[in-house]
Image 1 (tube, rainbow, N blue to C red):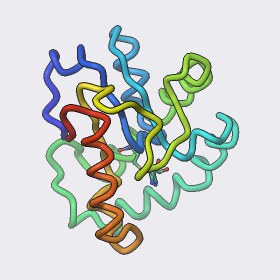
Image 2: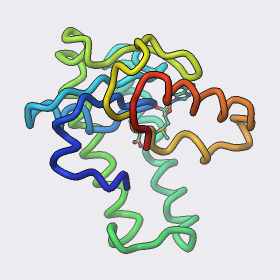
Image 3: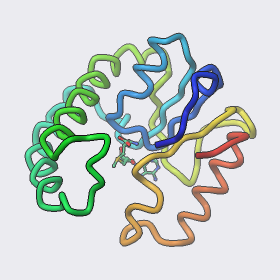
Image 4: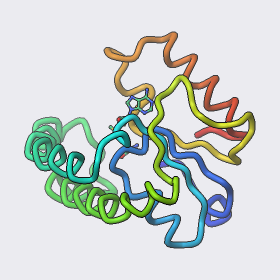
Length: 156
Ligand SMILES: C[S@@+](CC[C@H](N)C(=O)[O-])C[C@H]1O[C@@H](n2cnc3c(N)ncnc32)[C@H](O)[C@@H]1O
């Protein structure tokens, strides 16, 4: 979804609102450098795992209920999407304790990131901005985008 190329993965990357995604784990395993920030990183792996167990069934039925709003090209069907998301969350959970220790997962929230101006080559933010407009108002979007542009030379 970010049209990432192999050379992008060699850049210093900020993953903003990475949550339980496996991006940091996967890029780190390839030798890349990613900092993930998200408010949920204040919680332990156990807390996050319990929360995943609680919300996963609801997430699956939501995919099924809204199946006509998805383009089923990359994923075959709601079950396939659910199992890919669950594998990503498991990959994240395996990586999270060592990533926390290494400082690759940091608790932070837009619109204030604990980063220097231009510290990152590339900032990525998926499934957060432009998706929850009923909760995140226009001004918060503007502030978030300006903050991402402050800390990274390119934002996707
Ligand atoms: C739908 S999840 C997407 C997770 C991940 N980016 C992905 O695509 O799988 C949205 C994430 O945004 C995080 N989030 C919510 N408010 C945020 C904020 N103000 N700044 C940064 N992250 C935030 C949530 O904790 C959650 O992990």
